Length: 360
Image 1 (spheres, helix red, strand yellow):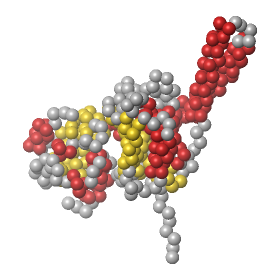
Image 2 (spheres, helix red, strand yellow; image 1 turned 60 degrees about the vertical axis):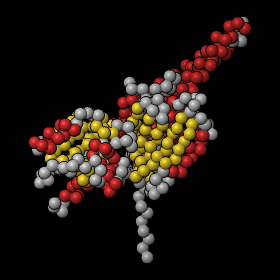
Image 3 (cartoon, one colour; image 1 turned 60 degrees about the horizontal axis):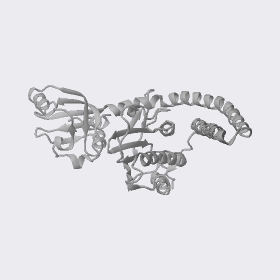
Image 4 (cartoon, one colour; image 1 turned 90 degrees about the vertical axis):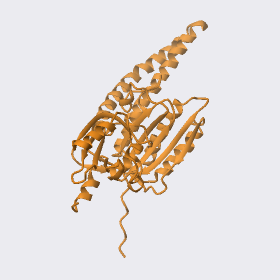
């Protein structure tokens, strides 16, 4: 192979796996290491179909492609590794020139591409939604104050039997005002004050706070990579994000039996977010909030980060929209994989720049 081959291999933006004539993994690029959630050293030599589960009758077509030396394209199939819920992917498989029986497999997760495309426009879309919400909140709060005042005055001149109606008017008015205040808070979030952050400190604060309140019925497990470097972020806003995600998981669990939430961190050096203007951002620090609850409703799974979309009966639909906005303001990325029994919210953050070395 030429000297440039290793560089091309490691620079491929999608997971790529080299398969030998015995259907064993011969090599894989950094993106594939991240997708498989394991190192090349550990995976090399293992049977490909033991490490990769494809929800399609692929092996026969794969053998034909190898035998005839032709490429194979498989679209919209679930691909899993055992380490995470399956992702809908497109597969491209082709013979390796000069190596009889060897095949190259490229894996293109559709969910990943879709969420990255969404992240390019999330700021402008959120800004429009926020502006409309703020305007409506301001206009509605004024007449509500008049309605509540009128109901209180009316309660002074009516009989005891009718007081429950004016009390209901006042109580519901206050509830709507509280909701509108949440909308205004959503729009007033300041820009993050970015600095070095130990993400494990943020997760530990969120865990302890949750166990003392809304997550008291849950078991929260720490599964950290102790070598994880410092992140670049606003610790208070990141704490708000993690608390929101833990709260959602806690509320989705059975209130009596509870459930388990796992806080998982790891480093994925190949993860890179490319923006619409062509610029790129490396986001190697990965934080996953994993729960064993019922999962997200299928009808809203694809829109869960949009404002006013909620899976809760009385939800405002602002919690995850706020989470998405905060992560977007950090130039990070957030995604969700959800099946009944396992929901994974994954946050990808930039690494804090290394401090300049002092000259001696």
